Length: 117
Image 1: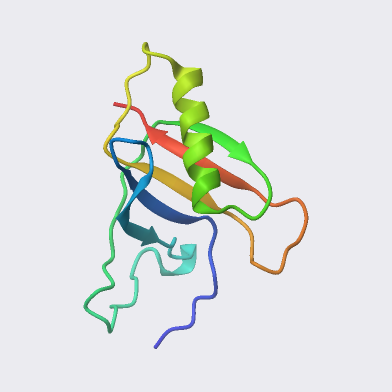
Image 2 (image 1 turned 120 degrees about the vertical axis):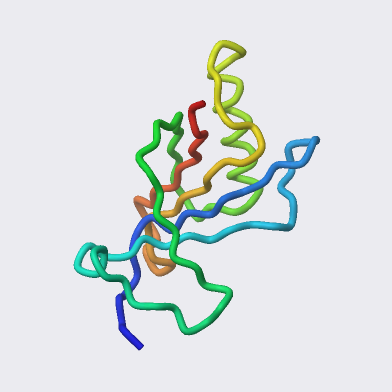
């Protein structure tokens, strides 16, 4: 029952298939605003969970435009190529992040994050 407004980024955990495409399962995460961090409201829908993320180190790439699945897949492939074989990171998932509301036409920010192991 608490209105919190939209937060950024909207973070989607993507699970790549063997061919690099994304599996149909995804997890969408929204940040809880700072004023609710200490005592977040309890979700009224059982499919909504509150998850606390610990600090993490990531490898990241940024791109603009209205991001679609194909864009995240392509930028994930570019990031993987740029990192080469020396970097160690989780390969079973990555994060697709969008920072802008749908009505913002220019200067959009999207990111792909790989979680460093």
